[in-house]
Image 1 (cartoon, helix red, strand yellow):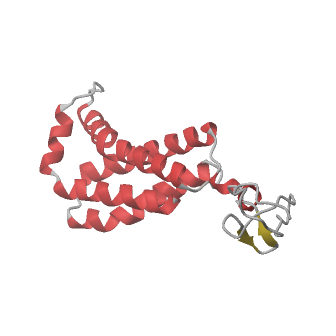
Image 2 (image 1 turned 135 degrees about the vertical axis):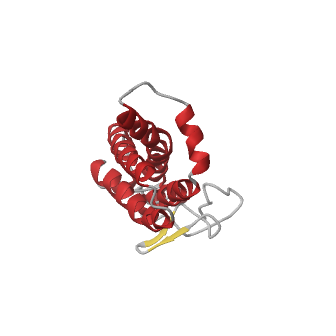
Length: 170
């Protein structure tokens, strides 16, 4: 009687539907086409979740650019509570644009990259660009980030937009 390749003391008549390797009930994987060994029973990662470095770079670039635009506008306009209502919409738009730019990729990798890039654009670059355009001086100033303390609705907007960008591309 054949023995399980992963558990040699166990005798079995059950074989993998793909490769024919003897398997026991402890290590078998149930699939729609029959019982398979753990090596054959794991499904490959779908192409929509396979993100290459080029697609990731494009998604990050798009998310940073759109985040900078959104952060700059919201930093200047001071919409107050209305900014909080715009957060999910703007974050979802940034996440969807990053996904489309990367070739409709989804998953944890693209979601984390889009959310981080969205945060960098909204919180770090948006206020810098807004102040630079308003003052005519294009030198980065760390004092601009100190202004964020006086804009709590902007920070809440940023947090909601970052979360929405993550969940839109997950």
